[in-house]
Length: 195
Image (cartoon, rainbow, N blue to C red):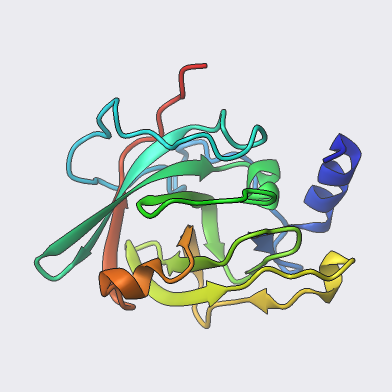
């Protein structure tokens, strides 16, 4: 995808499986300052052999984290790419042709957000969990690819409550795992990927 098009989409506030929010433009990189959601205490660190497989050259170099979803006594783990800057969040999982179960993308924001996500130029169905500052996934949704020529013609998936993070996984994964709204979500500190 031409760099100019990616930059244009970032300026517009979002893109495929990225955040869209006219009220609250994309935030800067998560920097760990007061109020930022840089990490939650997930049980243990992501083992070195638990890495995200190659997905697309535009996202393969992003940091990774181990996300733990706790639903009662059950725990589910997802190794995820981390989208923490406006450009990373705007790109999201655009042009990724396949996403295995147990793999996803974690979007981090510095403050509460109310905008949504769209699926322009996204090739696969995705589930999304909107996670509040308290670490609770208050809203789950399934998003389908949008084949419109213009991103503005794509539907936006927007939760009814503010969120501080969002987790995307393969479409239908939450249902297959029995995950419902109200689960607790935690993650390890993002780690750099070796080239």
